[in-house]
Length: 117
Length: 114
Image (cartoon, rainbow over all chains, first blue to last red; front, side, top):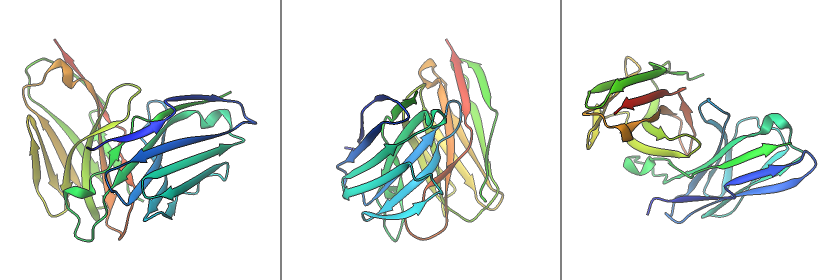
């Protein structure tokens, strides 16, 4: 099973709302990622978690707050977003091994389409 | 900073043709390179991953090559089908240790005409 699931599929929120995006994988992967993809643009890395610890934060505004409660779950908490934050938010996971190999493949979920009004 | 470029940006060919998509990257210190397919409004489907020590990988009608020293990769699609229509993204992972994200190219939008 190489499935990464994301909920919700679509989310519409106002600028004063607080919402959360959820990502789940049961492949035993120890690295999880959040990417943001604007229309007709490639995905851009936001955060990386390795063994449930935040290892990379690509200078993302504090209105985005990631959380990794366990090795299978990754959340992205949203607060006071701006209309320009509207995008497809993609979650990915990968196995991390010292030796590398095919297990380094990043598997992506279907994404959450976020619209900020 | 790593930059990934994909050529062409768009391609439209009749069904049955063989085609090549190109990807180049500016920093040859990569850990691996991954090719993805993305259908409109959907997530990314991994097609092939090539480690930095490898020269090529094959899966069905797809063949990806890597020339790390020149910073280039190609994705060859044999006997194209209308179902191959999608955006194809090339992405590289840096050679730093530990988990790291991918740097993507802008993609090639491919249309296979029936």
